[in-house]
Image (cartoon, rainbow, N blue to C red; front, side, top):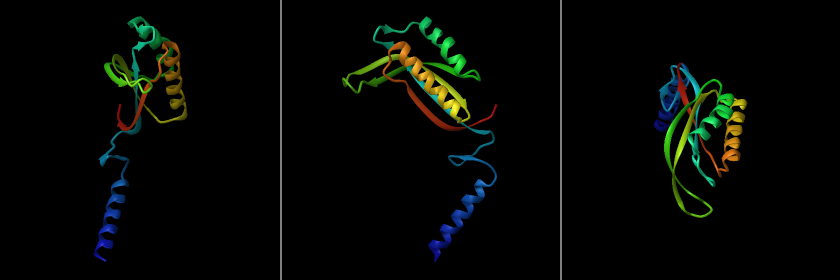
Length: 137
């Protein structure tokens, strides 16, 4: 009986905490629940390293039209293991971060950007990470 009462009280307290707004990892969201997507673009390809001009062209032609509401680009140094050969590689990279509502058109834009990069620069993959966040502008 005690165990049942404790579980019932825990459920009541949990639901009461949800009543006044969205929560993420037990932190009250005082902004808007959104998605943060990070795209990791390796800058080495079959033809060698991409130049800054290559990246800027991709940014202007693909990223700006696809993510017209905004994005951030961070320089990185990536490490990965090729699943086909087992060889490890390290390469410069660009990380594009975009905070957005999780809508179908946002997912389509992410897919189009990834596909365009892979095609243009003969890349095997682009890593995509989606995280639920609380954002306030």
